[in-house]
Length: 258
Image (cartoon, rainbow, N blue to C red; front, side, top):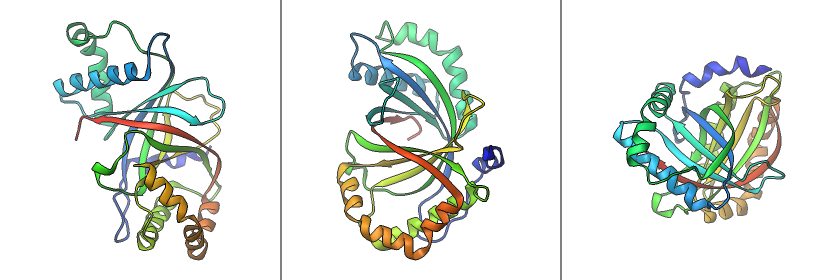
């Protein structure tokens, strides 16, 4: 698998052309599970929000979000609890605190007696923000769309080429206008995966509100024309092959570092 040749790029920031947003790396984790009988989505959210108090008490940098399938095909779970850190150092600091300090903290401070979610699987991934055009925070929806897509590199593809391509696409989108309100991230397997994993990375594309999603769809014909004219589609095909997309509802709960 070609993934091993690209992992080194997760430790570096990449130079960008003018008028594009920052590309940066981080660490992420996903907990796949089912909401326990008698519990609700709001119970899951409240338990996750309580953990923010522990993070702040211990000066830990960590964020949380919740994903719920919308158009995702057949799944064995009904919710994903997603966490992220700015780097590997913060990842292991938070996990160390969770294993060694959180049980005592929870026994004194938690208002919950049992878990709202039964977790069936957990994985950790390297993340990189590839591109995106933000909008003001006050325009964010509570629940937002996020698309996932599994991809693999071609024999000539690599992450460095892909990130350079993304920076150029973003620059062209900014010139077009009416393409704001989204972010694209690439997530690469790190821990918790089987040895026969059949993809190199996952594309996570999220939207800040439904209006942005609708506006971007409206501009699709001109976007496709731009992508074809600039040769971006050709570059994508030369670097990666991707499977079908699945769509989830996401609620970004917090980032203790902000």
